[in-house]
Picture 1: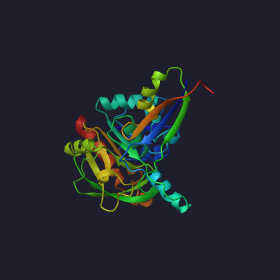
Picture 2: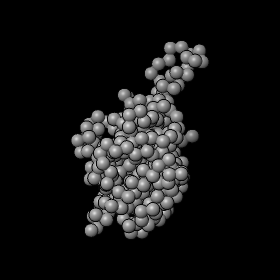
Picture 3: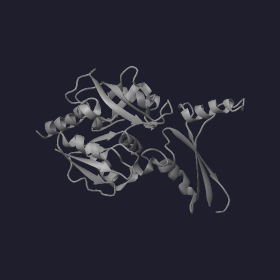
Picture 4: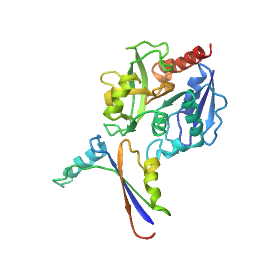
Length: 225
Length: 77
């Protein structure tokens, strides 16, 4: 299976995403000005500071030619994973509900966080079990997930919350401890922590992040088989 | 036409920047400042002021979490 990793000016986790995706399949960078996703089976919108994050994080990247292709891909049911800045871009593009606001603690924070799997069996949590904990690094200033009460109710009702911060780990003040949400159709997923940084014991503190990429591969192969 | 767009965090949404400023003021001896909120100011020349609303909805503000207010000013400086 093949992943396309979108590269914006200001992306900084694009190469880690290529590395992580490359451990479970093929992976290729796609420049933001390019509308061709190279026949990829899944797309990763990576972390960083796309277009300098001017105005709001992800606000300008969302209108790039590559994102037009990603929106089209997602609308056709393609699997899209947004990490950190990628999550912000997907929210700005309205592929995911809600928005990311400045951390409640007002600080750029870089730390290992514990996440709890809320729903297994989605294309992004395939092979994980509910209640399972993942140890993954997070590093951001604008990671406080917000959705209005009505949207929140829908998210819970449709089981779109796939990951929550474990008790004591919601450092950014996200509503309902939400760390990762998917769209209603379940094919677009965004999270603030960085699974692509947790694919090597030595550098990432764990290899739990790899499970997300493996899940995408399993889901994709299941769909093809 | 010169225009000014004011963008504010929606009421009721935690505004950590506003809180930080609100706490800093008394520390500098300015007593009595309350309900401080920090937003964004965008000034621009526009050919067609009718486009300002759609500009705000699409790019200048995020209507999910921000309110915006458009002010029309004098001729371009």
